[in-house]
Image 1: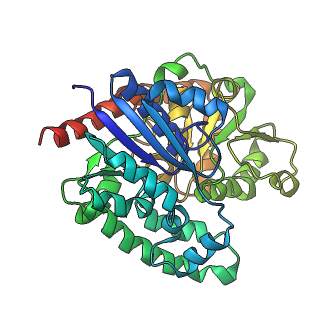
Image 2 (image 1 turned 180 degrees about the vertical axis):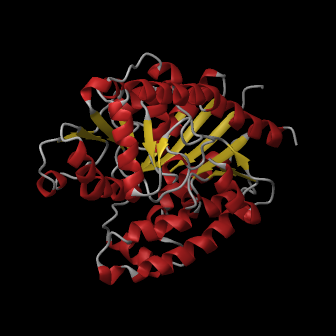
Length: 400
């Protein structure tokens, strides 16, 4: 398609790629820039723009505009979270006059597409968009109203009643934002069905992807007998998954296979966990910039997720690397994969333990499962395919 002028609005810098959302945004920007689109990125970030992020992002963009978000623990943020009619995430990112003024100036320019990442980014954008009578797209990464209970379940008991309040606020917010958008983008067909009643047009699906070429040469090592998990530990479902692994799944596995190790990688890995779980067979790696090395030193990937939405980039990257996948149904939600063909496991701990034992003791089966997963990701989840889907949304809007 012809090159477009795109204005993307985000609530975080997409570099470093420490979360699934950041990874998605970075690679879509990379693909669209390579296709000639002229992109301005307006970011409200909780961290300042550093040299490394600037060097990674500016070559992809026509302009990069970054404003710092006020601290989460500021009095204004806390008061807004308690008293605002909008949900917590929207109030944290909202009430931002400087950001609204920056967007107002940008909206005075001609744009082919204005795209907001996440519905909670709409609050500081609402007035400028209305003032300029500007159509916009919302790309929604999760059904956020369903994640409130997961997040609030980790708070002190006295604060947990806020979960119900905030879920109600977010359900109303979703309806308001998605009905105001010209087009809504979901990451999975399941999420698209949830959003459909609120959207003015059929909800588009732009799948999560992975850089399949970057993982093509990884060869997992069954001899290592290492179980791997990677995740962003600012995300409550990942914390729940690891706690379940360490409390239930791995102790049950160690009864039969005491030599197996568990390797945990990811951004914001809680330092207190090493004191809570002291077994020397647990490896606390933290954030790993390049995953290929640790993937090649592992035998199987365990995704014991019980909550969360969207499709899981950590799962796609593991499959792209040929790692045999043991997973819950929740971990492969949004993916057209079949148990026994592309992954093994189940919803309960005993099914996950049985699958781990089987794959660790049968390298040939593990290899076949890993290669089937790799083939599936190559065919359906390369970032170039995701960029094709996003361009199709742009074409529909710009040709209407």
